[in-house]
Image (cartoon, rainbow over all chains, first blue to last red; front, side, top):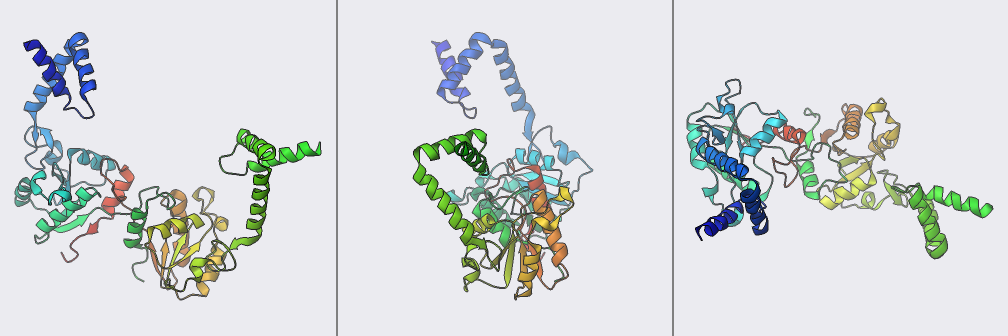
Length: 202
Length: 202
């Protein structure tokens, strides 16, 4: 009877994984316990290790092992430009684009505009703390161009606009390789509204 | 024997249609001649009518019936802003985005940078002629953000930069709804390089 309960609990627990429903969770549970108990033990230990080792970076709030993450520890990066992103995965995307050599702050969430612009989903207090101990000139708000990302950018701008920082946001417009025929109307309109001067002096 | 020749010629002719290869062309030819001779006649007449009626607009060079297209004839549109695009379909995309109420010029092609920036693929002479008879302040270069589109924009800018026009190009950046995690690295880098100031006065 106790065995039965533990098995059911494992199925329930596997459903915390993304895209795993009851059927898949049941198949996984049987697979692990019947055929791959070593794998199950490995997964159990990896989860325990990660839970004890991985925490938030004291500076940028991303997930890392140790007190400060590798990017914040890198003294070669510019310390006067801070880019604010939603999630740790956004830091990875940005690093892959090789276009930002400053530091980051990770909000660990986004503001939901349908729930009254609630700030509890983003790490505002750690951000304020971070800004206290820094020599930052420019803050780049690199939130998504979705309703949640726009709401987050708005909230951040309201919070920061009276502080002595240059505040910028990522450009909107045509994606690289974009063709007028295939780009959605909203993006096209944005690209027209924010068109660049090619001859500034005229 | 003559019949056989005409049939083969029809198959060859159907292959001028986009994405129609020999097999499809043969199936189309049999379908038309065996089962849908009315359809074939209708297609033949439509082609004849279009070939005689559809020509280039005298002002914007797009395809239209009559001497001047509907957009160029519309006196409610601003005549001081001219947007240059590659193809007539780009005018349709732009009109669907409701973000430009000026006029257009259609190049009917793009510069191929791998073939020595040859200008013979774009309607330069009609463009020069168009500019002579106009009161234009701003020229928006709305070419694609591909190698061909960039080459076309470069050539146009070289041609126009010493003339008394404000020259702009569509903004590059994150598409509407774009999330950092899913946007390609080149677009992400462009969005950072061309980031907008949210507080211009700081």
